[in-house]
Length: 403
Image (cartoon, rainbow, N blue to C red; front, side, top):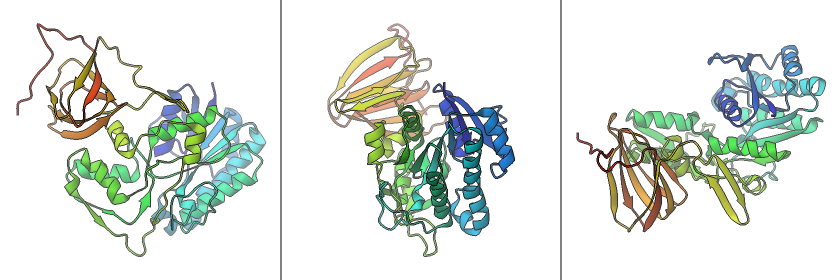
C-alpha cells in the first residue's frame, strides 16, 4: 500500500483526492492550514513554515506527495501578487527542501495549470513554450521550474478547469440553474473542462505506471464558457437561462487556454467521457466505470461491482418507440445500453424536478426508487435491464405518477 501525502487537503481537489485515493487502496494523509471537515487524516500545517513542514514529512515519510495547495483565484492573484508568490512559489521551495532533507525517496506530483500559457492560440501540447501573462500563471510556471531544476523524482500535471462534485465555474452555473436564475457566460474564452473522476482515475494510472516528467491531463473537448454552461443547463431543460456575453477588455480569463492531452491519453490509456456524459455522471444518472482498460484491441469498461441484481433482461426497441413511464418504490433499476441512442426523461416524484438526457452505447443508467423514467429510442436500440428486486407478477413494483 502506497502512502500518499496531499497538500491543500481541505481544498476542492485535495479533499476529493484524499477520499478517492483512500477508497482505491492508498494510505492517505492530508495537510492544510485548516480542517473544516475535522478529519484525523488532515494535519494542520502551514507549508510556508519550513520547520513544521519538515517535521510532518519526516514523520509521515510518504511514497508520493501530491501538491495541490495554493492560491487559484486568478483575480485575487492579480490583486495580491506577494501573497501569491509566497503561497504558490515559496511553499513549493519548502516542499522540495523537506523532501531532499527528510524523504528523498518520495515522488512529487505537482498539479499545475493551463495558465502557464498565454492563451492566444490554445490546444497547447507539452512541447509548447510557456508564456504566462497572469500572476497566477507566472507563479505556477515558477513552481514548475523549481521542481524540474531539483533532484527529486517528479511528475508535473497541467490541467484545465476541473469540474464535478462541485468545483468553480461548474458549481456556480449549476447552482444558478437550480435556482432558476439567469446567467451570462463568455462566448469568447475557450478551455478544456476536465471531469474530476477522470482526472483522479488518471492520477492513479500515472502512479501505478510510475510516470515521470510532464503531462497535460485535461478534457478532450475545446469549448467556450457559454457552450459549457448550456450543456449544464440542458439536463434541466433550462438552456434559456443562459445568455452569452463578451469578456470585458480588462478581464483575466485567457482567450484560449485549451490543452492537448493526446500524450496522456496515449501513455495512460484512461477512459475519458465527453463533457455531456460527465455531467450525467455527476448528477448520478450514469455510472463512471470503476475500472477501464484501453489498448489497440479496444476497451474494457467496468460498469457495476456494487449492486446485487436479482433479475437481468435483454430489451430491444425500434426507433421512435417509447418504454417506461413509471417508477418503482422499492426497486433500483439499471440500464446498460449495448447499441444505439436513447432519450431519457427522469421525473423525481418527490421534488417534481425533471431531468432530460441522452444515453448511448456503453452507458450504465442508474434509476433510483421514486424516479419516474421514460425512454424514447432515437435509433434502433438495445439494452440490458437489471433490477435489484426480481419482478413480481402478482404484486409488481410499478407505479404511475399523478400530479
